[in-house]
Length: 361
Image 1 (tube, rainbow, N blue to C red):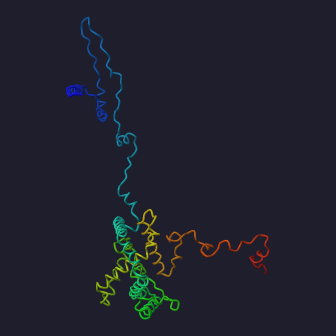
Image 2 (spheres, helix red, strand yellow):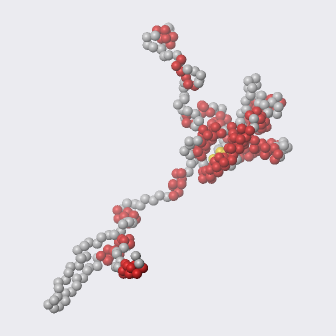
Image 3 (tube, rainbow, N blue to C red):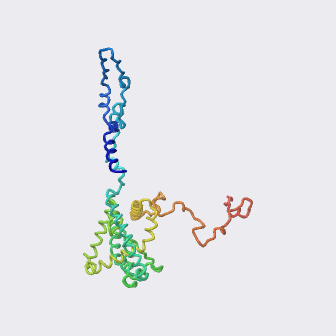
């Protein structure tokens, strides 16, 4: 098409009368109805023989139509008489807050940072440490640093008024420090001595005397903890440097100890972390639940109540299977369930005699 035909076509389209727009449907109802209620005036017939009768107005008998597509909810409730329903933002925030975790927003951000750092850096380095360093060397370092912490366990045993446990801890420390070559070999747990290691801390001592756990915390390089346990751990960190001094107050000791123990713990707990976090809908909430339940069980054990006896609900232990309450032939993988003793038949007199109770007076 030539330019001479295009320009007149555009001019004709521009001069065409405008069509009614749908924007008028959004005008207020009152304005539209006020315009519709104005009475239409029929034209006055002209005088003369050629006067024509007046045509009826097309809008005279048409009722006004409300064109408001989005009615105002407040106006509808006001006419119906129902009270408006309001939802406060504070009530929603209160419902979403988990008891015992008032710093959940901060903790979740720290947990997300930990997951990212652990996936990209910490876990690969820990698994490389486990692969490169031989197991006897890793076990020796683990026993060495654990033996250095036995005096703190002994002190907490005394503070919790348990002289028997304190005596066993002291004997364990002496055996491992001498026969065990400074704790490199854990000879105290051998069958002849039977002095296994048990954990104890200032956090346990505070809990023993009724100090509550406080808010739950997840901190970098610390992991899941509570305010009570965090403060107790910080107090323990200053005992040996202040009471003994060198080498515990030197960075030459603190740095290698922190790196080796951190990598070793991460490598040894890799399977447990996978079992707890893999497949969890909310890994943060799962780890928090596991930690708090285990700590509550440890505090109950401080007062002489066993962890199994204090748990009335099987779900208190998140890592146990509630269905496995009784003995099963499958408990021993080397036992053939088909060779289990068959149940006694009603007609078997020998079995009945062997299983029936003695009825003699």
